[in-house]
Image (cartoon, rainbow, N blue to C red; front, side):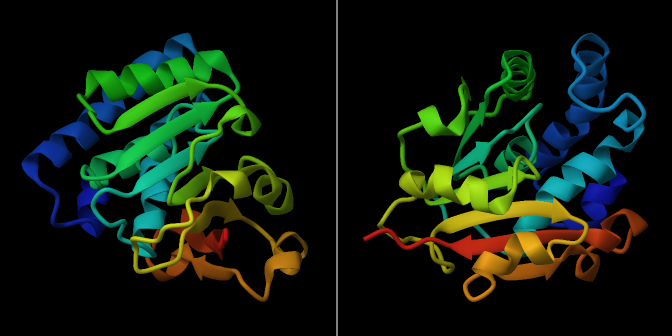
Length: 209
C-alpha cells in the first residue's frame, strides 16, 4: 500500500481504505480462481495496482467520463482507476466468466459504485465511451479494429477520446501503423521501480465523425 501513496499522495481516506482492502481480497480470490500468477500475487501492489495507475500519469479523466476496460481479467486496470477517479464511470468486460466474476465481486466488496462488469467479448459490446483502456490484452491493430465503434464522438477531456493501452517490451512493429498519431509514454519516467523499465502507455486518439 505504501507504494501507492508514494506516487499518489493526495488520496482521500476512503480511497486509501479501498486500495488497502485490495490486498486481502485478491489474495483470497486468487486462492480459488487463478486470475494473477501465483508467483506474482506477492507483487500485487507494484505489478498490478500501480501498473494500472500508470494511465493516471498521462491523463486525468474529467468528471463524468466513461471508460471501458477491455479484457479486464481480475479488474486491471479498471478497478484501481475506478478508485482513483470516483466521479467517472468504468465498464469492465472480459470473455472469461470466472475472471469477470472476481472483478465484479471485488468491486462490490469495496463499495465501488462507479463500476459495472459484463461477461462478453468487446466485439459484442455496443455502448460508447470516452476512452477504452486495456492491459496487454491483444495486439494494438486487432484491438483498434474492435473498439473503434465504441468511441464517442463528443469530447469532454483535455485529450481527445481514444484508446489507452498498458504494454511492455519492444513495441516498434506493433505501433508502426499508428506511429503518426500515437503517443508512447515510458512508465520509467514516472515510477522508479525496476519493473517499469520496459513498461509503456500507448495512447491513440480516435476521431469518429
